[in-house]
Image (tube, rainbow, N blue to C red; front, side, top):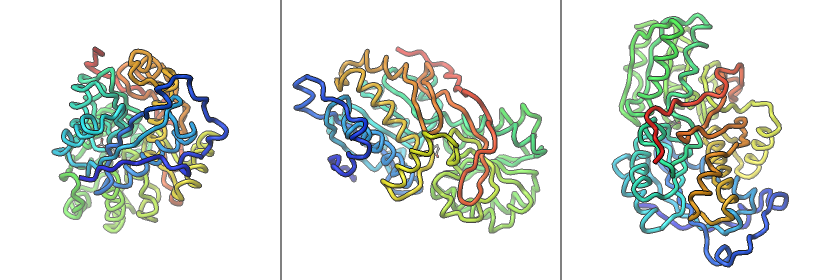
Length: 395
Ligand code: PHB
């Protein structure tokens, strides 16, 4: 169990503080006690880098506010969820009951998210999801205190089928990890690809976080589809890209993916990622002042290139800031807090997005190609894409 207290350091707090610092509200409580923010993220395992990027992005957003939320100081609590679903409820309970967090930021893995979701629904504690795309959290089990600043698992792949068919790739194999994120990404892919006239020759899978791809790559080679589409992320995605190229498949079977395939892994994957096509709600090369400034600030602060996870962490921070500023730091004023978050327009590096009635971003999808270790935008794959929020009834 790796829970530890963090205090926002001055160095982390000063980015942009001078230009955007807020005046302290004139309420005594704001000066005496701190907002308690809990991170429940993977800091070990195949998604470790994703957790770090999310935390970095989130801290950057707060630092731009002088390191405060609605004028109040912040105390941080942190749990490594290890992307382990069986430990999800216990870890979330720790943050909520022992650490008494006002808001829980987490997590990456859809299975772990379901543990957080149970605890969030039962306790009523505010939960901002900075990644995990599990459908049900913003569909049949949506909740007033649960907001997603990322995507639903089928959002990127619902934009994938058409570009594949536009390129004449009529027969495809699907491959991913067998768990909610892979299954739901497949759902979006199947819908969009078959609607565009494509045929799915075979659906392949392996357990999370297994990376023994060899037998499956041999099977793909013998099936000879026009294209392969997939969902992988983090360390596993880097290995899949390298193994796919090492098997020589990148020479004649075009690889596509839900954009996570090429996020945060382009250094590790090297030339094996060149030419891979993906759909995603962000791209490194988005030519906007907002994205350029974000990328510059992030690289300066963290000595690393930001990716979609960093953006989602940053946007989770922006969303919380909108809410906290509206209630001058009093997060117990839930009605006003949620009203501000419901109506938020997030000026994100990915482009402006709004919150759907079921609490999921309504956002543009980009078609990207990997070139020289960068995800380059080559088209818009969907404008203002909203998840249907099927079955959501806010209590
Ligand atoms: C998920 O489990 O929901 C998940 C994990 C990693 C990603 C995307 C989705 O990159």
